[in-house]
Image (tube, rainbow, N blue to C red; front, side, top):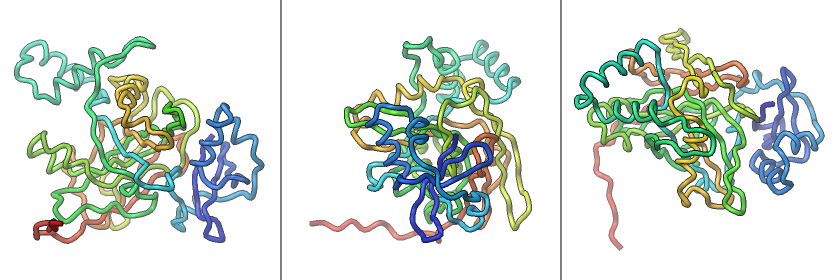
Length: 331
């Protein structure tokens, strides 16, 4: 089952449920966020809560995507209470690369970068037995709900950026209950947009490079994540494919379990505030920057995967240079 949010024919927000190829508006629901809170309050699964509502008119989500009427699949009415975060160095990559890295680690561990050391930490202790805690992953913050860009809208790099490139990922979507318990709503495609040139200068610039907008959706998969997700990421320039590559996700392709990544995010009381929404991106092993691609103004990124509904599409935009220093006024 997939859920999404759209602008209906009257311009109002509507929640859509898709079962197979059939997509219909869900009656009596004002937003996905309210639907989730209703399910938590009833102490029932989201699927059961959805089925307790009547279905309304059928909709064509692919057509609505062309009309740019798809919204984020979930949002918080107060953007400050939505958190965009993520983990890196969580995916295995190709088997040959893994083997080469294992061999290098055995031969000369002292020459490994901090990034490679963290990757190996995940390989060795990122998949604990159920109920146990494994090694913590790399973690980063992207912003609050003001940085969440709807499918079809532009991902804008600030004028001081040195690059703006896609990262195709799977994001876990969570809502915090009134008692502080995190509830996983489901999963969505995500574009974890980053400044890779800045990050490459010095790994300590990673935090800066991640403070960029991100997009996710358009549809949210309710239920467990498949063990293997086989998707496609591509960049179109002037209507033609500039770069295209498959990406793999799901626990079968990760050095950490989802439970371990979730534990190390929600172990912080800061992230268990009642009512908050969390969009936590699980990382990727595929990005065009690694293949020497430099994205430009007007490029369109398209991320798709079977089982996740309509592809996630966003155009890239770059603000003009911002050379003037930021002025802070003194009170």
